[in-house]
Image 1 (spheres, one colour):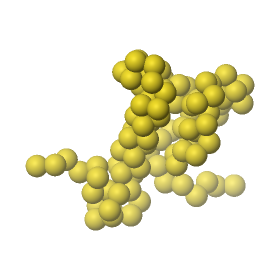
Image 2 (cartoon, rainbow, N blue to C red; image 1 turned 90 degrees about the horizontal axis):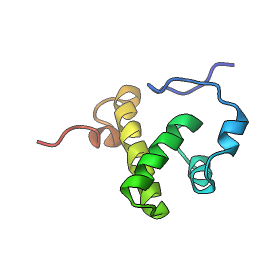
Image 3 (tube, rainbow, N blue to C red; image 1 turned 135 degrees about the vertical axis):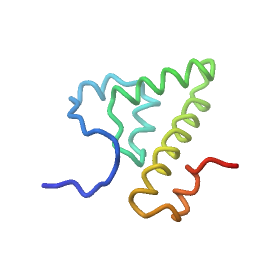
Amino acid sequence: MARNTVTRLRCRRASMSQYDRLPADLRQWLATAALPWSAQSALRLWQRSLRTARGDTHAARAALDRAEARLVARDAALVWGPSHPAALLAQPRE
């Protein structure tokens, strides 16, 4: 069955064991994520966010939200056109 999604993200097949090994806070965030994150890329971003936030999980989750919003905004221009409200967030400010 063809997937009804349009995104620039590559599709990868990951085992559930990779997902199960993720930290609980990250798994919780992924459960409500708007995009189909791979376990590997989500973990990489989570670890970087935790380092930047000095271990603050709330700040790390906020960083994941911002990263996802940027990706959604970038893809919105392709899917719905450059005048879509989400696509306007991705445009550089002058």
